Length: 586
Image 1 (cartoon, rainbow, N blue to C red):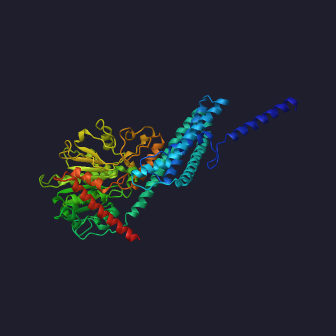
Image 2: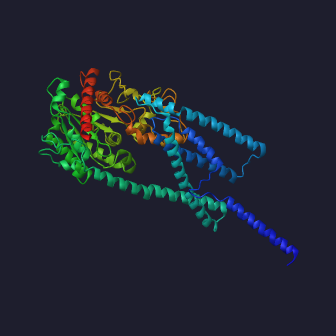
Image 3: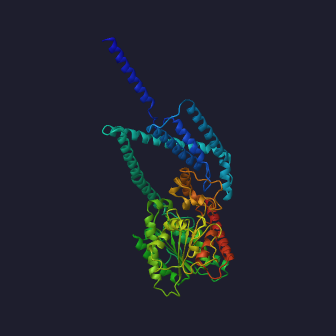
């Protein structure tokens, strides 16, 4: 072997070793490895700061920690992706003093932003809590936020790294047969479609199947003080065409909590009738039409068509009709009314909304047309008034009636839709097409001739302009209800309801739209809207409903004092009921 050959051999070995070290150094960290990209951390801390700004509802330490961890990992991923793409397209990279000053400027800016957000966080949250009458938050919440945020960040980052490992592995396989850049592009498309298919298919199907199994079992139980009726005016009682056990958990509660005649008389001064309540559970019939036919038979059997008014309730996902909404009705008509409801699912509204909202619409339309087709055969001057009601997903069902049924040829007297979800098409259309100069949270549409909006305070202006005179529609919505105001467009666009002059009075002045971050905050506001204090979020109070019903019913001679008296009586009844439950638990 010559000296030249020996030298060449050594050079090749050195080059191979250097290349191997380069590959080792460039090896991406494993899923749970505690190694982080510096630019990724810059993005994570920036998004961490943004996650602290207030949103519609106050947040506990745990909820804030989840949002913080989620948004931080998004910031980390975006920063790493940007740097990777920048190197991929061979963009200019600063060196020497320029690099040092760039890093120093970014670090200083980030420190100021982060320090300001941390310093202001508790104050921001307490401002929102004060608006809702909640107890102030202590700065001692920070350990919870940091712990939950760190764990959430770590787990989500590990999942992302695991996906990256899978992506690189599949890319190497494809790269054997195709040019590198084309292979990378094709691999990204294939893996994206695969992950999307898993998330929207198998994983979601398994989630919905498990949720249905859990909640269907719960439907067999009872709420406190659910008692089978002994009169002819309620479903499940003597002569009823539906069995008590088939009404479901929410149906049995709805029937059991009918206001007493003596309580109604205490407000009206006397002459109250026994209110009629009919309900058909999911187990009562095989098909939607069968259940609707049973509901009509119950209305006929109880004499509902001889009363002053019938209110058809489109229930929430589990079959719930909010007592805050339905109990004032019995007082306002002095018991001379009937309320009807029909179950279509075991799942809560927030799951049903994404699982199968079509059944909500089908149930509401079938229920309405079945009852309405009989109602129109009755003498117009003696038949009862006919109204619709829906809360949350139930309002989606009511909108199904308004948009699918020929209302001109199938008239009714009015409808109340409370907490309409962001997917409600009619609500979105009316809000987008509102009269110029009116805010998104309280829009005025077509000068209020048919539909009007209200919130905690009575905003219906019942005595202003022409409303009706036949059909009156009302939307009841809180400015802090995440179910109403969430939208996928929060990812990239500031909503109208946050713009200057269009912010509801119960929304914090400090709330600011931040791309991507506000989307996840809004998603958490949607999920937590049902846990807000009464009169905020998705929790609509008795007085909210009573004022709204006063606008829909347009009862002759009805005054604000009458609404206040009814709301006070119903609230006292509910407080007493809650006290009985508390005493029983103790």
